[in-house]
Image 1 (cartoon, rainbow, N blue to C red):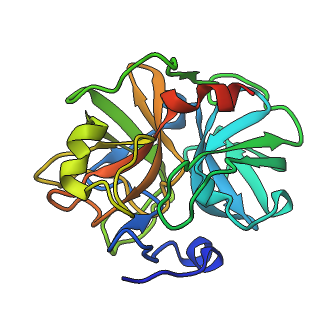
Image 2 (image 1 turned 90 degrees about the horizontal axis):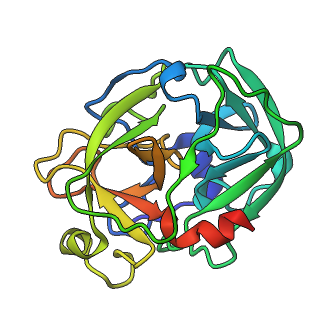
Length: 251
């Protein structure tokens, strides 16, 4: 069991935390290259100018991401790139003015893994930059619905981070079903989490995708949070259950 500082996580994006061998950062494994025009709500969150996490545009001034992407850092260290298929060029870069990290976020268990970023200036919405509808508080996650994850995470467990956006389709797994993979004790699945992936593995999110969107039928349902081996059998990705945080996000 290895735990590392979050600063090192942001720099390397390859560390493990205390979910046994859990990997923060999410990951796109077994996916395909994507164009931002098909996923205009996706942004790259930049830490000191370099890609660290993903995020979703929920208004022209607010971005939704994971709390472990903002843990122990300041708004002045963050900016976002919107409107580009590439995390290192193109689109529009806007600085972050404020971080609203959930006060109950647990850096050991990744419970309450959600943050909202306020931008210093408004995004100009258009073809490649658009908001996404969020799941209603009353909507339940079901088993087997095919959702879409996007991001710039590693292509394999020990692989490289691509410059072009990637996408992968993953079946949703309810909280109750996912406890069969990770349990419910310390470092396991809580009510604020659900999973997505295949029992046989092969398709997943990976390091560098953290904070990014999981979308079902055009609606944002989850935030990429953590997992075990990228694309491994019986180790689906774990996502923050957005339906339980609508009052928090809506403020």
